[in-house]
Length: 124
Figure 1 (spheres, one colour):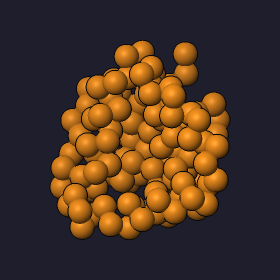
Figure 2: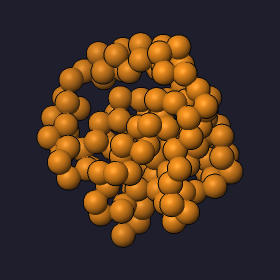
Figure 3: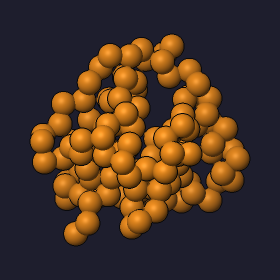
Figure 4: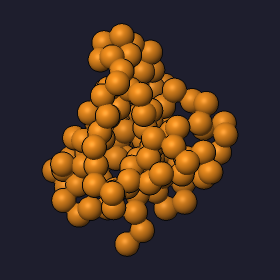
């Protein structure tokens, strides 16, 4: 099975805690993780996506951003599959909420927290 890749903002505490939350619930071990500042992201992610203030999710050859990425990640986790129905909420509404959180995340959660994941789950 090909891995799904979660790309996150390395310095962001909320992002790192979210990565650890996902990792703990990934019973099938299908996710790999890379910071947007890492070598894998710099070599494989289109430059226009690297400049976005967004989590990215790479699955089946496609990059997803913002609320779509978050919902795709959640709906892949066994006990969170129900979140797939939230995709039906208009993207402008979903992304509006996502953007508000993204804009304030550093102020609310700070920086400097680092998700420590096993080597086989990290991409560099």
